[in-house]
Length: 295
Length: 254
Image (cartoon, rainbow over all chains, first blue to last red; front, side, top):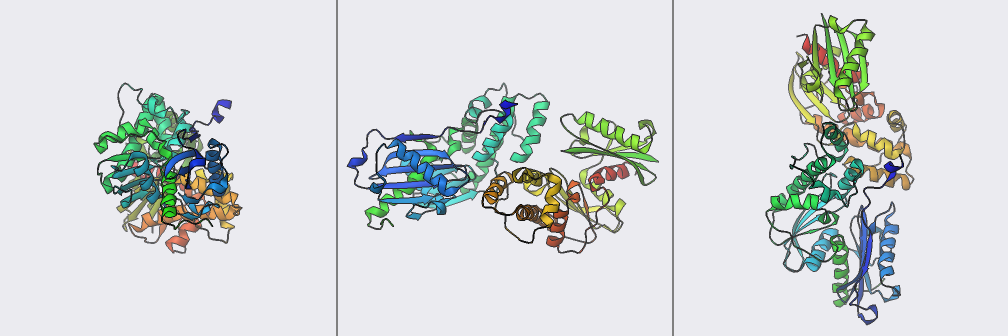
């Protein structure tokens, strides 16, 4: 029974340092902290360029999670002193619980601004699928929000829903995407998207003789449909970009994009850091205007 | 005349034997993986309790989410089964509510007991019994203690999350914040009741209100329902969980 304890939902935490930038040369260092319901990120920028980040799971305590993500990013930047930081902005679900932040900005604004940075100024529609919500945001060439819609009522189609499904089927969340395409024939989406009901519906399908891959495919499709219903209400203006952890799951993304009818933009950056990157950029802009003063 | 009613539900399968308008036997088993077996076992149990054999049964009515796997049964839709059951137990029934593990239903009944309007939730666990079950795991409290625990609370705290998956994290957060278990339990019951009441309001609340389904055993839920429906009394039969099976047995004999 030890196998049952395996944490299939666990995705890869990471930190990173930009080898082309040296913190000692930076004039202005700003930090963005995005405390989400499931994951937390810290991005450190030098003069508005990404210098380092840390991406990890949110714990039961928001202030601790903010600190942990920050320390994780600082670890990547060996030796930088905290006093060098000019400004820090908190964002995300737990943004008011970032004890060392100078101010907080909503995650909608930060995601649009961050997507503008990590995907480029051509982005007009940003889909963010995070741990606990689905956001469809329209923005201008500067990354300023012009319209948005959010669904945070239901776990279906969110990262948390995907984690629960991975655990339920005993498939590592990192493998869900690839395995869901390992089917002879693509099944229809499951009828109920409710993650709680998936527990009985998925076992029912397995009982009928479905393979795990077919069940994964049916759920990935249902999640894609659910996500599409949010995008559809806001409307899609190209270019289209996806942020958040779900952008890494091709099981959902490759089923979603034909519904959208567009290619999604590509990026070299980690899609989970968009919110924190946007926050750090807002900090940079405030400091440049002389409005950013450390508390 | 002897009829049987079988309600093959998401969580458990119930069978009832009716003889000349009286319940003479009941059987209940967990549905588990094998619906056919659950149907067979529940009927066997009910026959044994009634002291009859399956051959004595003239007609069988089948209902519930697994009704199509009940062989040789007259299929009775869930709303009809609920309406017949409410009328069987309480002739003054005007609103029938059935809250099970994965579904919640409400029907408006006319003076003859026929359903004239209904509302149903089968899409979201936030408005069905599974919600309490998921929360009992998060709260590490046995399911059957959840309702009585909620009754001991005198403090109203809000639950922000609607989805059961998100509510689980919220409950964990509340535990970390050292919120009393009884208050969390009450918040859980208030939250599910508010969603079911808003569903019932779509068809209107008319007394007498009859509650069926496994959730009617839960005193915390029943109390929250009474408060939110703003009525003094809800009618609950002795074995509310057998409601749909009784309704199916009544309908099969018509």
